[in-house]
Image (cartoon, rainbow, N blue to C red; front, side):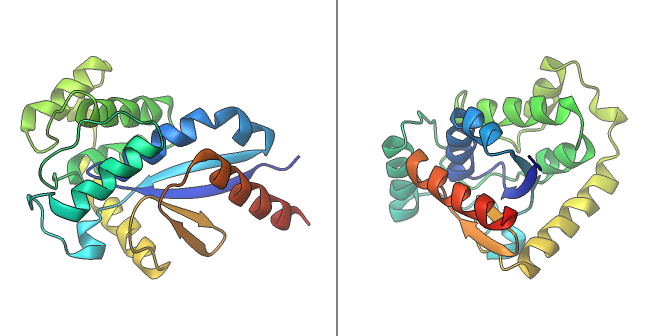
Length: 195
């Protein structure tokens, strides 16, 4: 069966992206059965929403993210402010297509949402890289930062307004739902693509 690609736009600063990442990891066997491959693509959500870096995450925004995490059974330590995720996203793009990309994504997400580390503390990303045996000085962060800006422009042009966003063809499906809903949505989309 032909494998289908679903691009998933995400931002390391987003609690809902972390929740979505964990939910989709639980569904990996089902994704394999559907011959679906998720291509996780970082972007800079600030470039889409204009919400300022460092802004307090409180009130309904915080309550909603915590409610979704609880409903979907994902334990989370949520940052109190919107973290600057640009460097982490740029490194992910520089590592794209390699096994280290997957390890980087896992390490950054777990570092922020399980350990409570802040992405914009300079030593945090260096610690994450060291944990993986990765030398960040070998990563062309300047070129990767431009690539992150380009992915953000592409996402905006594709009408991405939030994260995570699953690109089902040209249709952006934003947010994360419980596994039954995600399974139904992805199954219908895959069947339509193959018919």
